[in-house]
Length: 320
Image 1 (cartoon, one colour):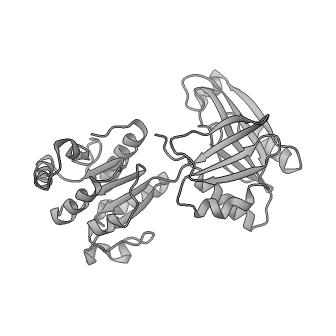
Image 2 (image 1 turned 120 degrees about the horizontal axis):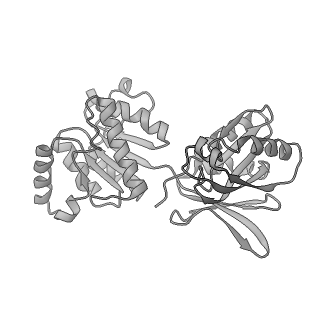
């Protein structure tokens, strides 16, 4: 399972630059070998004022890529650059050994028409670009199990870039931990939704960037499409709320299900859920107490431990 790349902020920046009438050029990692610092599909964009966003190498070849982007922005043809990441450059980029990368540079003209559709989509996408011409097509419902790659079709070399939607995090409990979690999730590019039927906790002053859903947790969760890219975390300490949410989550393909509380609290929780008919194997999916054991004490530290465990489960697998 591949976690969503950090493509969305790049496309949002492209949209902002387009609105300002600026020329934009795009660099995309299209192939890698060895310990390359950035994954296939990673982006770097440059506008005519010299402002850039993103990265294709962690910094070690950016200078050459920017020069190539300036050339295509001035009218040069799209082209592939190939770099060998040397031992010294690899260490500077945080690697233990070198590697090679291919980077495709192009003007953004043939992609600008897709920006609104890409940013509005709630499904995965496949963006296909002809390396020789830059001609681009967009297909909704790109296979998230597939991978971004160069392919040969009818004597043409195409780059198929799978744009996987950001992870979704559904949090039951608008508590102090959730306030910290909201900010961290944004930094990680994770879409967060918060659920809490208790008026005092759900007050709009507590969460300025996310509207808290005040439905009962089981109803709220049923209203969301919970996929293998969704995490469900319960933080209320109230069995009436947490148990209702967990009973729904356990019947979905959510990749991470977690609940806050001590080991004693979690044991009692499992007992209550077993009475509802959940098997031992099903209950083992719940990470409880939630979060990696980092000795967390403060709300922010607890939020960090939970998000770290969530990412570990997605990146490395690790259902319980």
